[in-house]
Length: 91
Image (tube, rainbow, N blue to C red):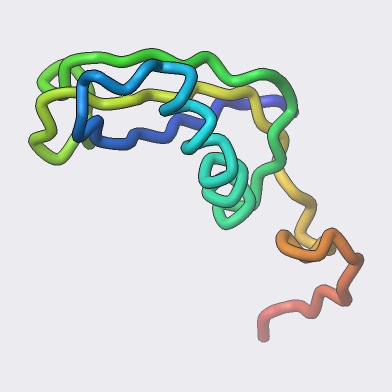
């Protein structure tokens, strides 16, 4: 199943080009998705928006928004290493 994952970063300097912001945010986007047990399954859409228009902006005037298609990481796969692990039931 493919879903969508959204990540938001405050833009602290509005003079930095979008490509520079996305280059800096891309590794963190991948890490955030993995920590949430998703693997990125397509190209992200990036945009800069007023923080007041974006839930979760934390009061930032401008935010960088990444929306990316994702697939869930199966429960028997370690999200960091990608190795299969034994899944034990909860008693």
